[in-house]
Length: 328
Image 1 (tube, rainbow, N blue to C red):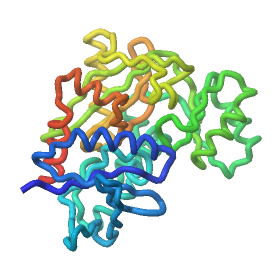
Image 2 (cartoon, helix red, strand yellow):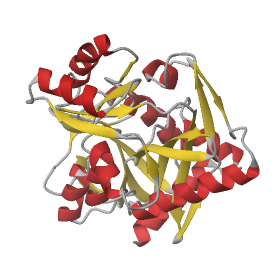
Image 3 (spheres, rainbow, N blue to C red):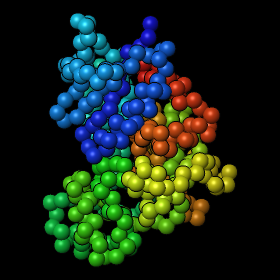
Image 4 (cartoon, one colour):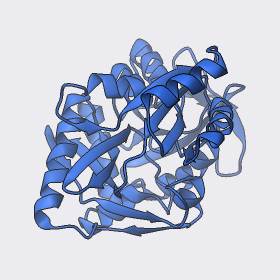
């Protein structure tokens, strides 16, 4: 008998449009011979099942079920592949599923909330040996003049100003001149009430997938990102304004070094399922930028490129992740 799989999309953050794009791709990739799939859309106003005719049926939040043709449908497993940002990447919905006993693919509450918080991730990995850029965390309630003074005292240009808990490069600015810092801070606070301000590391940007199936953690080959813009922003990620080279054109020794670091970071952070971790390569060192526990799965996304290079069929990859979650 085919398993009933709920596929989540939507979300509570600015990444909702990316989630919707990913949903189309993921639904097409799931094995229809093994799974009956149900597209579940959630946002702050509604949780609904959407059928192929775009009709909506409300989700019963007591047990995450739906009613179709007088029959109650409960899901054997829920997957997060096409839901980015909150409430998945920050661990909120995992807590809900844990409480009602719903199985799901991906990491749990602690790992998700930790990696969604860039500053907390840095602190957690501080003694792990994983290199990271120097940075400071600031809050919206702090006086702007104090933030500006502290940044100028503690950090050096160029800088990145990033929302601490957001993704897809929303609200990120690169600051090359102190006169632009205040504007960058204002932009960042439009997306989060916490900002991480980080020193820029000049180097080559790498992004690399990592996953755990059958108790074995494996790293894919890295993709090098060459943005047409000043950095890998939203346009570069999703509108084609970058060159993405898979595998990255680095030596076999450096590739192996990055893969080992990637596996180490995955294990140290306690991740499950698959993730994608971003790095800057400076000389022969790799500086971790952030971990993405629900990376994009649109047709432009990096992880599908890396799976293709590794000759891993996406359909089979998803099937393994789901079956492992069902057996957990």
